Amino acid sequence: MKKILLVYIFGLCILLSACGSKAASSSAVDAVENYVNAIVANDASKLSAVSCADWESQALIELDSLQAVTSTLDGFSCQQSGTDGETALVSCVGKMILSYNSENQELDLSTRTYQVVQQGGDWVVCGVQ
Image 1 (cartoon, rainbow, N blue to C red):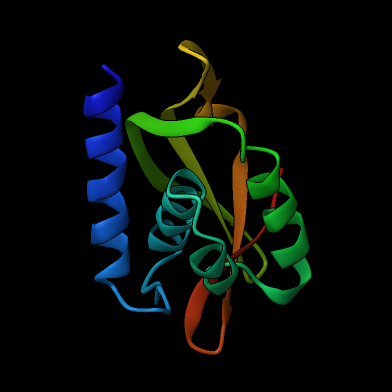
Image 2: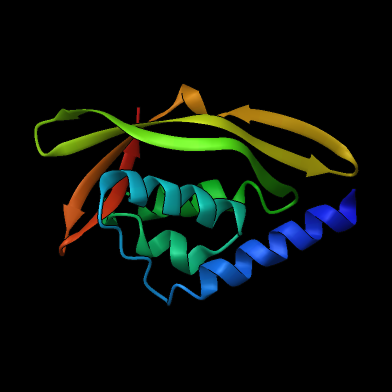
């Protein structure tokens, strides 16, 4: 099981690194998907690239809190659920599975609504509700 998990994470890291250093987000949904995938891949530089300046430190704190676990996604997908002025609201479904010492804990991704704004022509995550 651990080997499959490691192969999956390694493949995800390769896929994300092939996208270049800046994960350009052409839609609000892309921004959130890139954000969550950067957390799962433990990629601080990609996470910073898809976070607005005001949210970046909070995003990195969230990433730091998961350093001791291995993360994977199960049934993950997102869609835009509304707007609040110039802010797009994006909701996701699925779970983030956190594994530590052969024990799994599931985080339900549907409990958050991501706030996404355009910055420099790209969509970036700028908070959660």
